[in-house]
Image 1 (cartoon, rainbow, N blue to C red):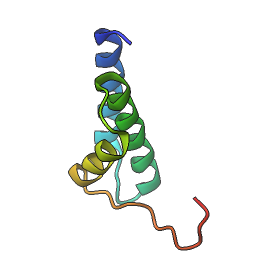
Image 2 (cartoon, rainbow, N blue to C red):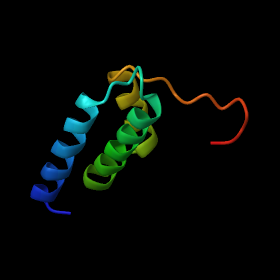
Image 3 (spheres, helix red, strand yellow):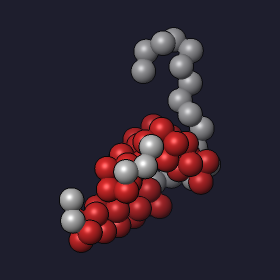
Image 4 (cartoon, one colour):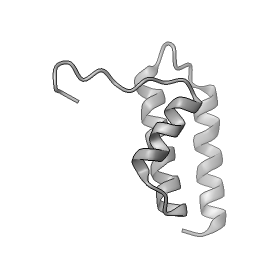
Amino acid sequence: MTESEYNIKSRVLKARIVNTNARFFPRCMRALLRKYAQLDAEYYGVDYENRKKELYEQYGVSAPNRRNGHG
């Protein structure tokens, strides 16, 4: 992936993240943050799980509730 491709994709994801209301759409917000963490992991070679946790903390999103074991 080139730098320009990364910049375009990251700008689009950041815009979607900023415009998503996490209070009403927590699953959508987590999905967008996972996509952003995956993009960073692919481009910069950082650990996906750590980047995802950092983004969850940065945007104030909690990890999904896994009570029933489905998802």
